[in-house]
Length: 165
Image (cartoon, rainbow, N blue to C red):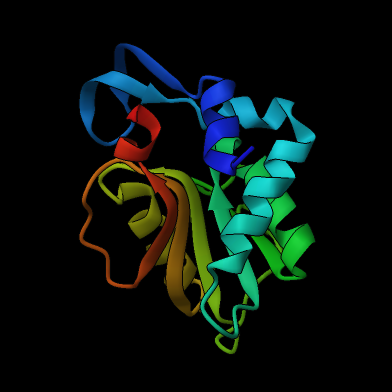
């Protein structure tokens, strides 16, 4: 069974009204967090994303609750460092934007997200990484549901139409 068929089988596409993080309301939700309950499927998605990396990636960066599992699996399978980007710096402790690996200007960073709609999350991560000395060279997403203008190339495994066929 293909990866796409497996994603359809666990019904990652939900037809219901939802509020999207950066794109208002939608009648379709791509619930990729469902793959976190299927370790073999998560691993297969991570390997497929890593196969699309541009040459020389040394670090992957993710943000939010949904990014940690995906980023950890991609990092483990690719051998790249993992940086966790916070939406806001911690208000206690070291008060940092970044956790995990602290990238340097020599690193070639790929920002990852589960779903691309407007690109807002990818741009925000890239801005935070650049402010902290990082060199973002591209992005990778599992599902591309919308068009986004990004200052770097973005690869994806599937688009929304693939999931609806």
